[in-house]
Image (tube, rainbow, N blue to C red; front, side):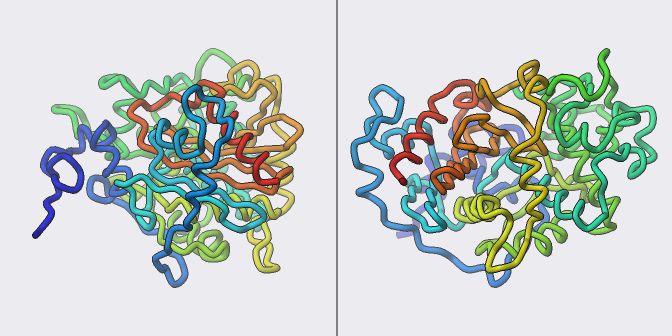
Length: 393
């Protein structure tokens, strides 16, 4: 007997549109099927192949202190936090894995703002090749940025979210500048009588706030999309192809990733990447190993060290958006500022890559939480990850 789409997912395919694809319950399916709604470019892996989930029931069901009342096992916490996929690695080996009933382990999952951190890694590789200099003005790469907010800032200001940008990350506002931004990236349907914009043309309409660049940390996704525009301009190559050749294939990714693009192919480097949980864990493991895989230096060790050790703590305290009291932000990555040296990449709706060098642990959690924000604003997820890292050693 044929199982219909509705039998499988609880709603009809026709119910899911560009206007609602990021909302529950549809997001349980759409976050693994972004290509059905938004144009994408493939980030190719070498010899992409399906992978079999690791059986880890005893680990997931063992009693542990998760930090959340009523969730006394890892599985209970993951289910509560509406997790689609979870992978934990210790010293390079998978020790635990979980997939929700609706999740496909081999389907690329949208990672939202973890895309920013991936983009910065690619930028770091290009920096080592002499193609990008973080201390140069953005206008050295994009002369047309003159007159916009990016007309008098450096590429480093953009990397560290210290651009004085007059823009609010208002995820739920259907009419403001953020909604216009999402229409330009083709994530929202066009608005009647509104002039179509490309992603790059939208970015260059943004203006400066009444403070200098290089001040407090101010999280704004357009900055990370500008990184993609600069990368393509500086190299003359498509971002998807660069990422495939410089990072995805060398790090041993087993699945193709993809990135959403606008009407003229501009990549959504701030939030448009989809990948499997295992491949995201491989990225974390590569960084934990100082950028080396099989004896090859894939990501420059100096860039990783700079990302882990630098970042202005005062700037973070003045503008932090994640509850890391001792934290820092450097090159699109969050630093815990704790003795464990943990660093992480975070995306809305519950996307996480957490690397703890002290316990040699990498944790990935991909989710379809209904609200854009949630666990990012409290300590539950950090408490859970730290408890898992203690179990690993």
